[in-house]
Amino acid sequence: MGDWSLIGVRVALYLTLAALFGLAAFSLYGLRTRERGDALALRPWLVTSAALSLLFSAAWVVLMASSMAGTPTWPIDHEAVGALLTGSAIGAAWKLRMVMLALAMLAALVAAGRGVWLAAVALCSAVALATLAWTGHGAMDEAAMGWVHLIADILHLIASGAWVGALLGLVLLVSRPAPRVDAAHLELTHRALHGFGAVGTVVVGTIVVTGLVNGWVLVGIGNVTALPTTLYGQLLIVKLALFVAMLGLASLNRFRLTPAFERSIAADDHGRALRGLRTSLAVETACVVAVLGLVAWLGTLAPPASGM
Image 1 (tube, one colour):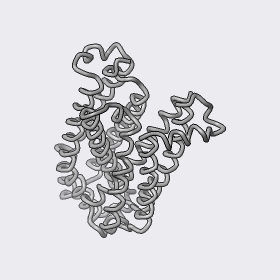
Image 2 (cartoon, rainbow, N blue to C red):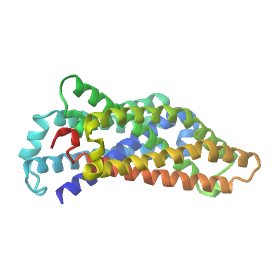
Image 3 (cartoon, rainbow, N blue to C red):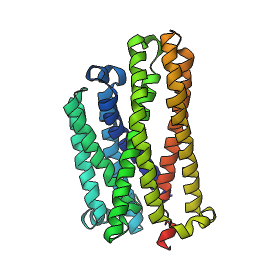
Image 4 (cartoon, one colour):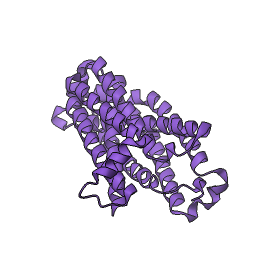
């Protein structure tokens, strides 16, 4: 039961941290200053994401400490929590995350769409998101290989967060109630969809390259054929299948649905095109949640390359 609680909290933490960083970043490159507050209700989303990230981080450290010490989650084992926070890199990363999240929340409270404060939210939340690399397999190696794995894991987390946050921003844009959808909002939505195309190429490229590095380190060439015979391998295969599905949906959005949406705006008949985008983005978001769930689960299992 403890493992499932830990996996659930890890999923929630991945989602809230990715939403915080990715939405802040999306608002910087995808929207203009005057559009951020009205189009996305940016401040409530950022503040809520930061607050939930703090809450889930606090829950995670309690669950992790009890799991490592083999003690019940409740009452809280303060001695185990203290040992985790003072005697490990995980504890140092957790403390840094909490500080960065507190700063991100303060910046979000005063951001109101202004670039400097929004950049502060993005920077602090990027650091907070990067600390998750110390809670998984990314920090298990030593020497040069350890640094390669850790850096790849951090870049993988940042790129994934950018994708998740952009999806959240786009879903909010296309899901706006019909009475509030005017010509300006339609143009803004199309520009944001089109603008994410270039950023998305960099994001996907980073995820693919760092994913290959992590796969090489965690699985190893010699263990590839044995993946279907292990739980770790089966989950990894499902994760890769979902990622391929996400790539397909992203390509559909970029090369079919977004151009169709642009034509529908010109023809003043955007209803059908907008519904298509909503469906595609909703399915892609569901795939993201499933992938993050698998990532959280995989983080509790020993990879083949560990020899365990």
